[in-house]
Structures are given as C-alpha cells and as structure tokens.
Length: 290
Ligand code: SF4
Image 1 (cartoon, protein in one colour):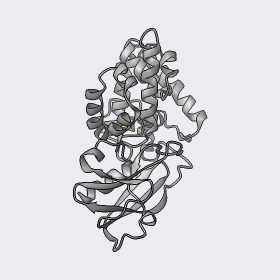
Image 2: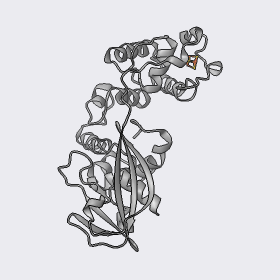
Image 3: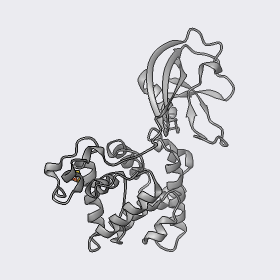
Image 4: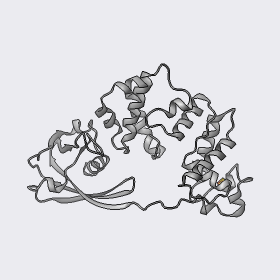
C-alpha cells in the first residue's frame, strides 16, 4: 500500500484491509471484486491484484517466505519491498533504498548524479549496503527512511537537528537544496474530462468497465456526458483534480435528473455502490456531490 502513497493516506485503508483479511489465506480466498472495493480510492490497483496473487503464492508455499530471494519472487514485490520486509520482519541484512533514502545518500555523499538513472541507483544501493548495520538491519533501514522522511526533507532539510550533519558533505558544501538531482521527470499532462452524476434519490447511475480493459478492468464508474444524450440540462456542480502516473485529470462534475440507463450502465442503490470497486475519480466525484 505504501508504494507511491503517503502513510497518512494509507492508514485507514490498511486498518480496514487487515480487519477484513487478517491472514494471507483470507486474502487469497476473497473475491477479487471485494479486494478491489476495499482498495477503492487508494489508486494503483495493480498493487491490490498483485497482493492477492502474493497471498495465493504464500498459501501454496510450504512455509511463509522469509528470505530476500523468496520475497522478491512474490508478485508485486520489488527489490525495495523485499529488502524492507526481509530486514524488518526477518533480520536479514539487506539495505532498503526508497526515495527518502536516495535523498539522504545523495546529500551525505554530495553526489549530483541523476537518481533516475539505473547506474546511479545501483551505486546508491551499494553505498546503502556498505552502511548497513548488519546486527540490526531492520532498525537501520527504518532509521534511515525515517531520517529522510522527517529530517532530511526535500525542500528544507533540518540540518541542525540531523545526526549525520557532522559527516554530511552536502551540508559542508552548502549544496543540500540542489540534491538529489532527478533529470527528465516529465511534467504531468493535463487532461480535461467530464462525468455526470444522475440524481435519483438513494441511487447512483454507474457502469462497469469490461474485464478485458487494459486499465481498471472490472471497476465501476460514472458516465461521461456522451453516454447520456437525453440528459438535459447538465448542471456543473464541482471540479476535482485527479493525478494518475503522468496525467492530471481536471474533472468537471455535472449533475442531471433521473434518466434512462444507457447500455452498460445501471441504477445501483447507494449502499450497494459503496461496496463496489469504484474508480478513484468516481469516488472523488460522488464525495463532492454528497
Ligand atoms: S545534514 Fe542536512 S542535508 Fe545532510 S543528511 Fe542531514 S538533514 Fe540531510
């Protein structure tokens, strides 16, 4: 859940998810639609699908995967997550390098290489491995991540409170603000879209994306105006913004009265809709109407 998402946004989802799926077996056996419904609003839904695949792989394994290599082989687990779980849960000596740790390394070593480049990442991983406190790898990894998240801040690092200030080369050189360097980070492309909330007391008009869709397959969403040609007038009631990877959706939410459901859409009772996997954009649009 924490991949590409802030802790504060994750906590309510994490708690709800663990209440419903307290074991890998519970998650492995659940219907995918229920898993996606509990994840709905958190975005990056491939994480939920792969987490369920990982739970199924864990269920089929003779024992819970406990080594870096076993964890790395699970669906959805990359080098960083495998190192974090292996070190924190199993005391295995692997350095976990996330964005916060990259920033600390770039500054402590005063290295202006492009952190988006694979060669830099491999070098920074090697530096983190060389720093790792092998007797307490989990504590070390959490300390370095926390230092990056709370002290070595992206815009205004708190150098006077930093335990590494005595060895930090960027601080000595006064270059903290210019590090880390990330070249070629594309600005998100703005996309204007409109969605319609058709109003009928206690119901919402939704359509389900086809199972074969490359994105958000099986998710439920609000119609666009073109699907409701008979819906007039369409009254703009809100604007929401929604970022996905390198796109920024600028969404105008329109409202109309009851209409005939077009093909592929149906009126769904509001309490049932709340249990469906809704796209994050739909969830945001409905929240501003409610
Ligand atoms: S001294 Fe400043 S720039 Fe260096 S690691 Fe600490 S907070 Fe970051």
